[in-house]
Image 1 (cartoon, one colour):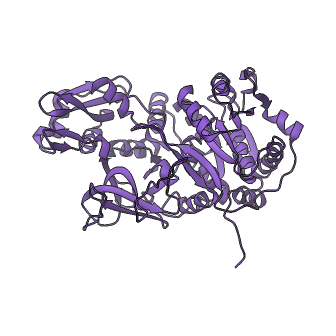
Image 2 (cartoon, rainbow, N blue to C red; image 1 turned 60 degrees about the horizontal axis):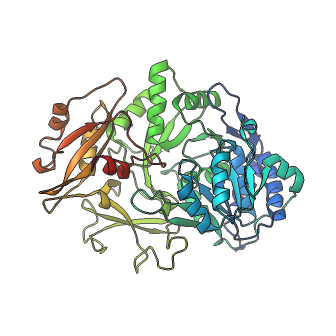
Image 3 (cartoon, rainbow, N blue to C red; image 1 turned 135 degrees about the horizontal axis):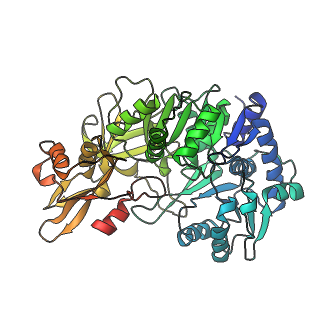
Length: 526
């Protein structure tokens, strides 16, 4: 057989050759015009930007950081770097400068590419990170006028200026498929963030995984909305998967509010929308308030945290779609399991099966595989071609001697192989020497129609060590009493698991990944 390196430039090459007129669309917000480019033109611009990166001195293995929203310009920057073997280190604009600076210094990023509205944060990073020699301000719809000069010693380029000045056609590929492709740091919600380095091969194989019929099942007829940010584990692989099949690809820019997404979905006739549950809650609240409909939408894929059945039902009823749950993490590139769109009946509280190439098992507290693997709770372990082996900058492996990675999740795999995440091992509450699993309480309360978001955390207790407290955000224009909440739990969990207090918050704190920030809840209520 011919040698054929599994490098990521091949996805945009394929799209440009076989789907040249299919568009990548960038939303400009509610009422604003969208930016448009076809795959052929996106590849051409990316190639010229590759030549410009090479002229700046970037070579195989060097790293650039991107501090940007989902846009055509961000995607061009990705492929320009990946095509010549430069590593894309995606940064989350919602993190503070101090934490971002620590990541950039560890990665020794040489170029910082930013969305125009991130200039002030870029100033702080340039001042704190000696490795940054160039700042690239991305061309985004309605954004050029927002870009003040970036102070400091770094040379500042506008994207089109850099292409016009140094752009040249560059040869893509020609390097080993095991070369580094991307760097993404974990959220750090349970400790210091750790870097995960993806290779071209691992991301290529993950792309093939998510395209399977029982996974995301994307095709050329689809219009795919990536509401998950590109800085969340490579946007769940969507910037690779959409061009791989020639799907029309819709990016919301920095506008992920309900009104902007509703307008974008309706205008572009989106068929598949992908993102965390909180995004779809905002969309539904907007539609409920305005009476709008989105008839083109067929499927919504959710990830980030376990999704209560009540929220699943609400999404399916209000949007008239099939909702698919999924589970994954940064260390898995990130997809671990997806519930098939064809599953009947719908999988309540479950996240489906893994694709070929990803293996799961449950283990005891010491990491030994449980003798019985179905229908019992254990610590979830994973191995596969797109699973981390060791963290960036670490010498010691993140896996055990057999190659299994401990996810930190507690899980049950049912008789049909469907995964249900039942909690985080670090979230367990030890009360009087016995364990309470917050996930079981959250699943019951989260299924109540009046409950929007819910979390259970441990509070320090003089006698019992810890006791559970329940923190909840009620759904818009709805309310529920403490007695109704207690009644829902009565008889379904042990009496000593009952929360000591029920706390209502106007807005649940969310981590920058869109998940409930239990670290913040523990700091305030624990």
